[in-house]
Amino acid sequence: MDQSSKSSHNSQPEATVLCAEILGLSELSSKLASEKFSSLMNECFDFVIKKIELYGGTVSNLDGENIKAVFGIPEPLSGAPAKAVGAAIDLMERFKTFNEVKELSNPVYLRVGLETGPVIVSKVGKDEHSRYNVFGETVNTAIRIRD
Image (cartoon, rainbow, N blue to C red):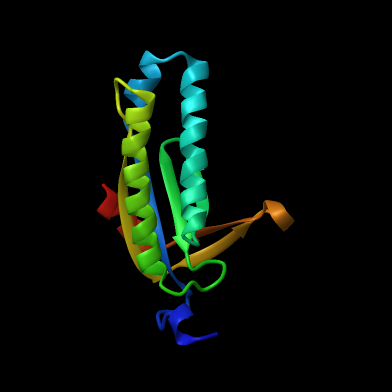
């Protein structure tokens, strides 16, 4: 394994973590029928996942309004920090367009934090249903930056 994919800190792999929060969901959910709200959220999550994957990242967690993605896990990714920044910028622009196209009276938007560093990796599930989740100070820092 090359040096760019390993950190000297406890030999943990290095990755870039994107932690995002979709803001405005509570207000939107109170104004829309549940079917309409669910449809809009499914559309949001679909473009979030596709955009992150387009930049080489992996969504490790979608939890209500929170999104955690990792760039460089499970495989090292050349230029992971730049790719994560590109994904974040594209996602923020996509949310802006989404609000305009859907003519939402209560817009939804994305707040993002990014950090690169050593991560603790946990593989959850088996076969094609497995996901990689990451933990540690790098993730915590990305969350603090986001907030």
